[in-house]
Image 1: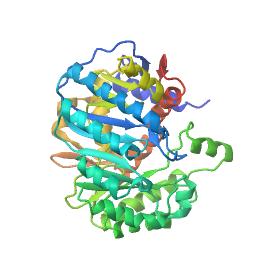
Image 2 (image 1 turned 120 degrees about the vertical axis):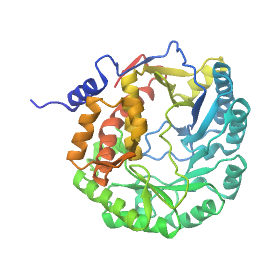
Image 3 (image 1 turned 45 degrees about the horizontal axis):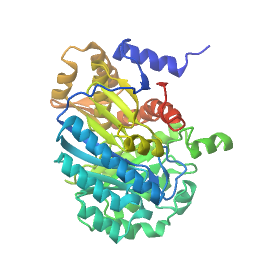
Image 4 (image 1 turned 180 degrees about the horizontal axis):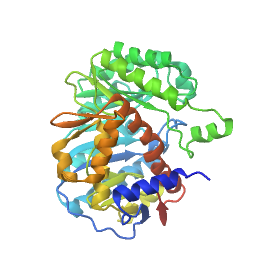
Length: 426
């Protein structure tokens, strides 16, 4: 009998993190909030006008009445965090979803409340889709002080847009992208997908070239994620339609990497590339952050927790004056170190000064990782940093797809069905 993937994962976790760390989210009956002075803010807007079947994130069909109730609730949530922590320094604000621009007018009110209760010093970033962009939306984003925009284009080819349930035509994309690029944001990112069913390398190159021809200088490429609870995941199981195998994905990833570098782009994460001095766009590499909205996650020293995924339960909790936190997991110092390391690998480089702060100079477990990685040509280094090679970036991408996202799947699968789970083991 072979060794299961779960047993390998558990053994690796125990070796690096230690057996004392419990990988369990439990019902958040009470929380001892650590005192912090500076955090990022994440705003989860769970509304979409079109529910894309491949999307694994917490979202529901847009409803005008529910959106008004949601606005009232999130303003209460902001007020409650202000009472807990005082006037926090906010290093960045990231607005995700869902499709945040579905609530473009409400966002103006939310950001005004955040500035009223906290000191916002960093960038304000937002996700949106081509079908949600017009001159009015772009004007309001600028008015609200949003500085970085990511457009979920996914493909410039109608056959792939149709396959993933997008409701816009490829012919409309150039004018939409030009509208956002011309507005003067600090950076504009375009998301493109690869490893789509039936997609070939020539299709990937077509999309990359199209984005570059439109003068997009920040592009994120990521594979189709097939979570079991998404309709795409269910479809794949029923129809037995398979994603490209690892060898095909490997060729696609190297093609993407080499194509960008040949055109003067630099790699700024496992999936993202940018050109020139443009400000980097990233949604995930904040060390500590507080999540606002239904299903939003928060990461603070010693604790990781989620709000209830149910929009109606989220609204009801805050109407009753209670924070909508559903589940929590305590995070020990060892896990916190490897959590930090994971996101540095996502960035594709590890600053040696910071590494020494987190791990010390004689951490044998990390030295084993580094030595093994260099043996397989996953890492290279200079005096200041340890870098992932292109090969290393691919394997981090694959690890995220098959390892980290397995944790996400376990939490999401239960939290989407049960607003207040008793226990989720990951």
